[in-house]
Image 1: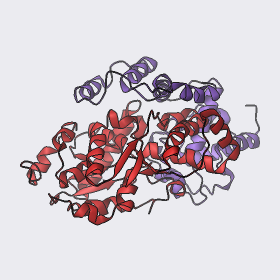
Image 2 (image 1 turned 120 degrees about the vertical axis):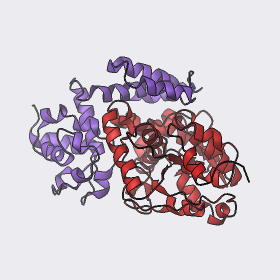
Image 3 (image 1 turned 45 degrees about the vertical axis):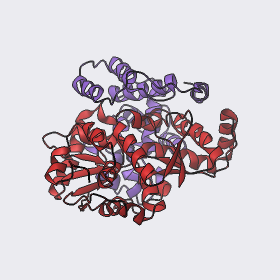
Image 4 (image 1 turned 30 degrees about the vertical axis):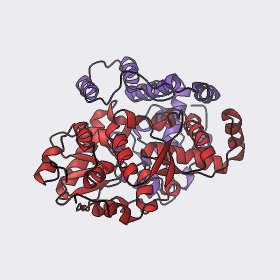
Length: 285
Length: 177
């Protein structure tokens, strides 16, 4: 399986362990990622907050870069994914706008490759046996809640996600790894996103609600596929110390891939005591 | 206030593409909004105020600046109205009118983020956060967090500058930025 790859800005900064674990997991699963040459930022929340037109046009440059290869573009970040999907939708639906973008960016849109989120690719393109047959260390005793956040599933008319209120794809993958996912009601609630620095009080309130709800449901960790969710949950918990993993980190752990220690060392809330208590770290098998 | 109630709500509906006139005022948007508790006017009230033509009230409200764009309102609305695009239009109109943003730090962060993309083609946290700190006139909050992020290698000293920056800047010029 081969995809164009758009890592996005977060994966080389605050989400560096996400980027590293995505690379490791994809390599061992035979998912070849061809990084887009010279990609640029999607504009994220800030572009649409201040300028609707800028927000829709910024991702088009990356769509143009991806086009010659004709492959779907795999994106680990839900914000990049959703912003790019919106731009792609407008290219399909607004001919005058499409022509303007084509002239400005020097390409001819053919609509072949599509933006795809990592979770979609792992859950739908990859047969479950491809993962289960490689599990070396079943994550027994790990009780995660799946946290999807906002941008991945909504708006459903754009993303086409299985169920915008109660998606189940991540639970399925976690079960494949031998973990025991816990049902909760906050999987698609918001972490406060880009208010992290400028209204950190709001983020602390929302993150506190999530961590408390996870604990009340009987979970011992939270699993995410979003860099923004991860940093908010990992740095803004007050009073609780619920470890927060990227899905790909847990896949790397279950598949016993090299590099795990480096990933976990990047966390603010140290997940190693939890993993050690469950016998999930130490001697590689 | 120069526009009539009708023209104000029609401008917002045209710019956002959201059919606000179909609102039932069921208030599911307010009930599901994660940040409604911090807003001076709640999402359903914002819709009602738009339909009433309360331009000045809305352009001074903090609700548009606190909206995180999570789309919970739209996903649950019986009439498929998404309020994030409406909140974005209200922010744009407030800035066009020359009003000070009701949440100055939120504006400062967004502006610093957009400047970073224009400068490098990708965001560079360190220089972006320094610009934000200056714009927000808030030098000391979260310094410990920033330092720990740097020690963990999560904020790099140097930016990644893309080669074809000219194309990104052309997109900025197109919108007059």
